Length: 307
Image (tube, rainbow, N blue to C red; front, side, top):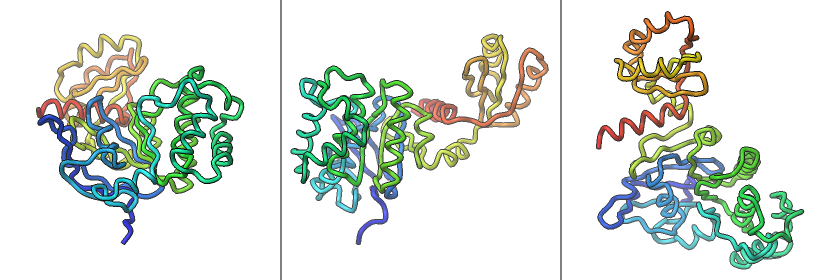
């Protein structure tokens, strides 16, 4: 029976030289959804993606991807997936058209020239199709890499930090295309360091030191954090930050422009601590809501403390 989930895996574990890179990883991802992986470098995001698409075999664990067994049917998974690697890997001495035509040959795409032309038009590459890839900016290379991933009309896209190093406009256009693909039924799994990108995912997961620590919708993750956040806006925020550092209930102090985000998990103690400082008229105090960055910093600090 076909699974109702595009990805349904349990207890995936990968060990390299006696070091556990991914530990007991379990997720379920619905078809046509965008699922974001966040976590520091070396947290196991890339290894997890490679296990899901059949490029790596887990040492422990089982499950399905696109209805295929990840242990026994990795070829079928790879044939129906598009994988955009962290490092740009197309040929700089070939043109956009030549790169995509070559990729289409690898996928044995029928009516190859027609499909390449349609893909070039979809990603807005038409005016540059004869340009050598080595001459492209990061944003155009990103579009080309995505184009190469969707030539064969995959059911699953696996994107490893796809927007690293590109400008905000290129990132927005990329995300518009990702949401359009999801609307067409493509399931998208991507890793990112940007919390604002995570907010554009249907669900997110935070992986640290090989462990899946947080998962759910953005709102679910925020609600589960237990954080209370106060915002203090003023010019002398650095002096305030020094005074508050180490005070009872204060677990995080993060500047955003002229505003400090002051967060802690014990709302009552935090409020008592901040009460004297709130009399300072040089600051405007507002009880706000934690953002994803607040939550993930808290997760990191809690994890470090348990090691």
